[in-house]
Amino acid sequence: MGLETFSGTTFAGGTCLCPCVQAALNDIVGRNTYALRRDRVGTVEFLRSPDNLVGVQALQNIVDPGNGKKKCVTINYYTKACDSSVSSSITDDCSSGTEPAPLCTEFEVTHELESQQLVFDEDHMRLLCAPLGTVDNDWIMLQIYAQMNALLVALDKRVLALLLANVGAFMDGRTLKQVQLLNTINSDAVGPRPWALINFQHEFDEAGLYGVPNVIGGDLVNKYFKAIGLGAVNAAGLDVSKLGGEANFYFDRFVQSVFGNDEFLVMAPGVAQLVTWSRYVGPYAKKTASFEHGQIVDPFTGIPFDLKMHYNDCTDHYYIKLQLAWDVFFIPEDAEASECDMHGVSGIFNYQYCDELSECPTVTGDSSPTE
Figure 1 (tube, one colour):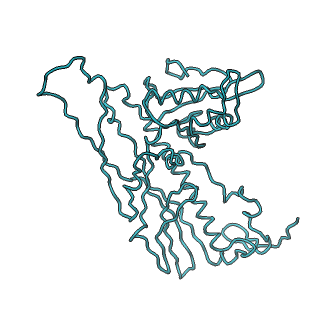
Figure 2 (spheres, rainbow, N blue to C red):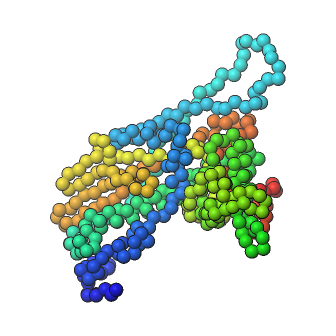
Figure 3 (cartoon, one colour):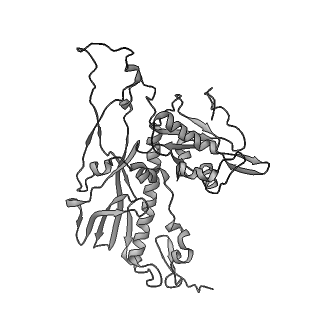
């Protein structure tokens, strides 16, 4: 099939081929056209998922009641008792003791993101070739869609930076452990190592954490979980395919750029919450013939973005941008007393995978045995 071409009209640094190309690029290429591609932001996806929020009271509904009011929330909590406080003898002392101190922390959404401001010139939009190509609304929405992806990638990287600052210790005191994900089954085959998932669950058991491990990462971690899904009984007699239900996996290629080469996260549910706040809702959502302050929801993550749009009737230009107020809540460190053996074990574990065909070397500066 050939496409007849004519000279186009140049604008905004490019050439409009309408009405020459009688179909939009999105229809020709399908879901893999650049404008429709979405980065997988696994960290944000996990924090917003039922895997992370089931069984907990979501701060989202407390901090942002949906009326545009900005709230600072006081959260009460207590310190878990240690077994070191238990006496080995029974006494008749009725006049002394330790009064539990009520603890509280304030949480407020303080971080902000804003997209670049999009400008739409009506003279250029008149060149869009509906019905055989993109119509005005489609054109504008595709550009907003692209801005959503950019905002979510920026959000994901910033959330990862906060997670890095709040990484917890393992029960043995280390803050980074190496693990072998793949190994050789025979001379010419590589398979997933069941011991890796068993180690993740073991760390949960040691720390008294409930729920399945939530693994976030990319590269070899992604290949590992895909291999588990295709597994069968291995040479050791373990049915690898059954390991798929022992953990949840969220693909995120940005983990290594924030944490380090070959590193990934394993998180317990509920230990961190992503909270967003919307300005332009309730009485603060406004719309006239020349401007709109409202909200638009990302169809992939369900995150609502504030939308600001105004129209200059003198120059026939639309101006549109997206905004997001956000923050992450972490369990306070003093929820576990400093003298207890679980102090600092936050449920956010940092792992590094090593070569899939050999045992892990020792982490630099760490003489502890590897997994």
